[in-house]
Amino acid sequence: MEWYLKVVRDNYANFEGRARRQEYWMFTLFNIIMILLLYIPMIIGTVIESETLIFIGAGLVIIYALAMIVPSIAVVVRRLHDQDKSGSYYFIGFIPFIGGIWMLILMITEGTSGPNQYGEDPKAGGIS
Image (cartoon, rainbow, N blue to C red; front, side, top):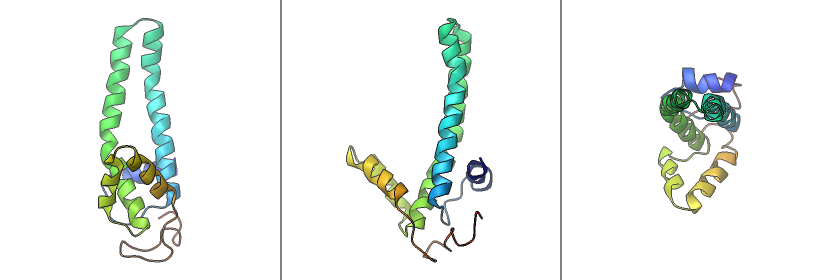
């Protein structure tokens, strides 16, 4: 949860610096958990056939998804910076079929050791 809060609260629209793999993957994990939790009212509404509950659940999911667009892109850009790659590599993900696989590999790959053009090694300084 600490990593999720670091991305959302401290680095909401920060596209500078570097993000370790742990920061990216913990943010992604908690993001998925939050979306699944927000789907619960929709599921319950479907079971009890309540259009109001389905509408509320859908609204919560949409609001949360819109709120997470900027920090999600920011953490990916900082993750790319950790590998000494430009943030424009983000657009690789839009290439059909290959792009998503390539981005997954980039998100899994370890960052460069020591400082690079985007800042100090985040592993060297702990969580900050």
